[in-house]
Length: 422
Ligand code: HEC
Ligand code: HEC
Image 1 (tube, helix red, strand yellow):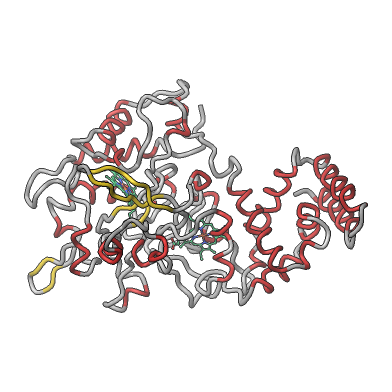
Image 2 (cartoon, rainbow, N blue to C red):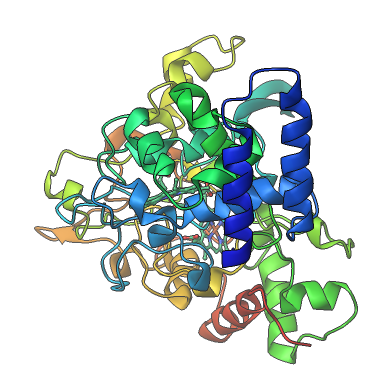
């Protein structure tokens, strides 16, 4: 925000403070009118702009050094783990002795994620329930608003002791007057409400085109304004081919549609891929610790479909499953997967191609015995997806994808980077 705007907003903030009479409405309306004049076309724009300030303010963490943007950097497709070493897989918290337990996913295109739920589907004449939606790797937040309330109070992230501490920090920020202009005079006085409004503003920012620009080469291609190279075209075909990469099965799009919104490259579903255990995660120093994803959510018991006859058996089938991420901007967001196991994109595609044909390339051995699917305790190994391509191969067979074909898929994935210049 420009200095001039800040001064204007500050004056408005003072002007409206303490209003509790009939004049309040019109003064707030006036304030919003003035905001509009100062470059915000609508109140929603003012709210999103406030959200951007909140998203980028390290003053809102307990240490004063960490903001949402520390782990969601714009130049890394809104990922990042608050450090520059891609070989360290998880986020470092506001105090450097604090580590997260997961790799930071992109916050881009998350405005398209619906609330978590189980969707009924017919399979072999029976109704099954497919988990879908939700924010986070395990979908535990139903909305961007709910998600945005988490990191401030997470001891491994921004580490604030209370909502009050967060709102106190907002109250002394230079954008505090903007907060009052957007949410009304005295908005910061009611901590519970102000905290909800803070999450509302952050979510409004995450719904702006900065997070969903649809400006990749792939989008330009859909719009008829760019063409794939031969290798990218081949990569896209292999990505879609059910006998080859079969990636489109989960990283979905709508074949035939030239509407970029129809190509989010995620089914928003949950699958157990058996990504190898990452021993660089501090939590994993405990050999008994396993990140089981969806089935380990604190509230999963309450969220199961009531029709399920054996809830515990049903829940167990969700162990090891994580939400399919969008692949938009994937070239910008190493490391990969919930545990950051893979440092580069080609490695990920190679894993898909050879997990079954050459498992010893991915999993360790102990006393000559291969520990296949080493991050899943015994019974959960049954949840691993393996019946279709590219996984439907046995050890020693030819992989579904050759090294050249892997290169082509990687080349295609690079076309999903936003900011393509025509
Ligand atoms: C210390 C690093 C860190 C900070 C600070 C942080 N995040 Fe995150 N963010 C993560 C990690 C790690 C995850 C994944 C956690 C999980 O799934 O359990 C995540 C997940 C998310 C997601 C979900 C993306 C998806 O695909 O489901 C969004 C959105 C998000 N963060 C936004 C924010 C906002 C807004 C803030 C500030 C209020 C913030 N983050 C602060 C590390 C961070
Ligand atoms: C069965 C569904 C499924 C199929 C098929 C599939 N994926 Fe995935 N993909 C996922 C899920 C789920 C994750 C996250 C898994 C995790 O972190 O444990 C993921 C993660 C990824 C990631 C890392 C994303 C990130 O943000 O870290 C990349 C890259 C990727 N997939 C590419 C591909 C490619 C390329 C193919 C085809 C060769 C493919 N996927 C096939 C479901 C699938």
